[in-house]
Length: 578
Image (cartoon, rainbow, N blue to C red):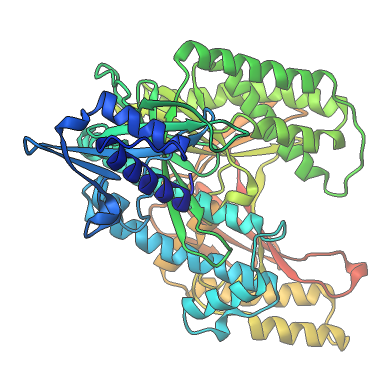
């Protein structure tokens, strides 16, 4: 229900109610008349009411109930009104994104963290939009100027900028979930339950007026929204779809969804709604149906296209198949979004042969077993709560390279295991964890110890002037990187390694060998050593944890020698122990 329509409904019901109390029947607005009649039948008799006030009669309308009935005995009845099309869900409140945690979860600290996160990521989002329009965001001194420019360029959302919107909104959802998870784990259910009751207005009188799908002014029913909460069910937190986070008790859920007020440069709204959840048996049936639907895709698979980037198609099909195997073996788990793995497979599988799909299915069974063994060793006892496949376009944290997130309950607390999934054709001793642009390696994204911009420009000029060959350029640039790393303090080396490896558990499937391995980068302890120009003149190697872990940084051009000059890259390979 839009704000304007809802406000008109409140005013219409208020007017109609006042007339009915005076014995005047005004049926010109059927929705308002039926609602007012319901109030007099179910809430208070007309003879008992002294005064009717709408929220617009109050000093602060946004913080007041839609209607307040002041009875002759001095008591008050506070009523919230909802106007809903058909069998749609009711939209309870629009709590402010900048105040929801302090107002409803009673935590100023959570609110401060969220506001800081939203400010940083909103600025990044605006910068993305300006970059897509070939505009350098550095020419603007503040966010207000950037918003004004974005408003001029993009008056509405388009297919080109929708990925930026989705990524930003999803980042808000993910961060909010982490805040809720931490609050749940640290202080238990008390504050979470307070927010649940307050946002769902469970202690107020809530009246729903429904109108027909095709005839907006025709009433199809008026009823109370008064859900019964089974106190025997524990409080749960959840994610749903790509931008919802919520709190659930039994079958009733409170969903919070982030959205833009209107245009790409508008403010962020937080919409709350009541949501009914299926029971455990129905959830299991849904999961079985999803498994069967995926198996139908497998059965009718045929190779149809040739792609230049075959490894990407293999990787995406591996992610979808791993998710499918995980779901098939854990049918009682909740899915954050049950559609993604099927869409992903349908999109990328036409590039793979039947044999490649066969190899992936068989080998993922091995990788799955390795993952379960790893989790059992790490947590001993746990219960799977939900599983989520993460689309590439939604990854906003450079340290989070996860393809799948498994949410578990461990000793009564929520734990998220972020999984990076990688498919390699044959068993090998190393895997590429990053293909970083050479110009970024010494900058703030990784080691934060300098800038190679001038050196890269100088190298390009010498190459184009035939003063240096491809190999000489690579050796020279690799030597400069080795010198910089060799002089870097330990904390900067630590930052760079962590940025390269991320913070995910890595599951690698060697699909032709039918083998799998699970790696978790442990704590980086002891001295980090730098070996310049090792093992070749275009490589530098870092080792740590008494040389048991190793990262090789190899200089390369992004295209082959025949292309001439192309952007300089760095293949960052992590040594695998199988």
